[in-house]
Length: 164
Ligand SMILES: Cc1cc2nc3c(=O)[nH]c(=O)nc-3n(C[C@H](O)[C@H](O)[C@H](O)COP(=O)(O)OP(=O)(O)OC[C@H]3O[C@@H](n4cnc5c(N)ncnc54)[C@H](O)[C@@H]3O)c2cc1C
Ligand SMILES: *[C@@H]1O[C@H](CO)[C@@H](O)[C@H](O)[C@H]1NC(C)=O
Figure (cartoon, rainbow, N blue to C red):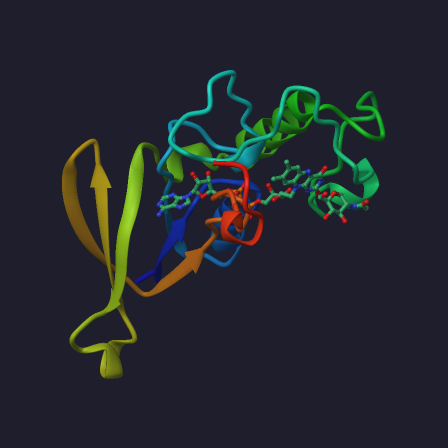
C-alpha cells in the first residue's frame, strides 16, 4: 500500500512537496489553513488571518532562471524580475500542469502532529486538523512541514522602546 504523507502548507514548498510525493508513488494530503495556494505570494488587499503576504508593489528580487522549479521553467514572455501577481500565476500554472490542487484541503489548519502510540514499530504520526470549527484526526506515515518562516511578523518591540 502506498505510504501516506501529510504536507502542511500549500505555498511554494508545499506545492513542490506534493509533486515530489506523486513522483515517488507516495500518497500526499496537503492541509492549507487559508482558502488558496501560493502561501505568502497570494496577495490580499486586506490583511487577513494574521498572515504576512507580499505587498502591492513587490517585484521579485530573484531572476526567473534562479527562482523557477527545476522541472518547470517560466514562460518565455515572463520578465526576468516579475511582479508578485505574475509569480503567483506561475505557481498556478505549476499546480495545474501537475494536477496538484486536488490533493489540497483548504481552510484546514493543522493543530498538532504527535507520534502514534505504536510509533516505535510503525513510525506513524497522528495529525489533528481543524476545518471551519470541525476537528478531525488522521494517521500518516510521514509529515512534511512547509509552513514557511516569514508568516508571523517578528516585532522585537522590547528592544526598540517607543512604537506601541
Ligand atoms: C515580503 C517578502 C518578499 C519576498 N520576496 C521574495 C523574492 O522576491 N524572491 C524569493 O525567492 N523569495 C522571496 N521571499 C521569500 C518567500 O518566503 C519564499 O519565496 C516562499 O514564499 C517561501 O515559501 P514557503 O512555501 O516555504 O512558505 P509560505 O509561502 O510562507 O507558505 C506557508 C503556507 O503554510 C500555511 N500554513 C502555515 N501554518 C499552517 C498550519 N498550521 N496548518 C495549515 N497550513 C499552514 C500558510 O497558510 C501558507 O500558505 C519573500 C518573502 C517576504 C516575506
Ligand atoms: C531578496 O530579498 C530578501 C528579503 O529582503 C533577501 O533576504 C534576499 O537576500 C534578497 N535576494 C537577493 C538575490 O538579493
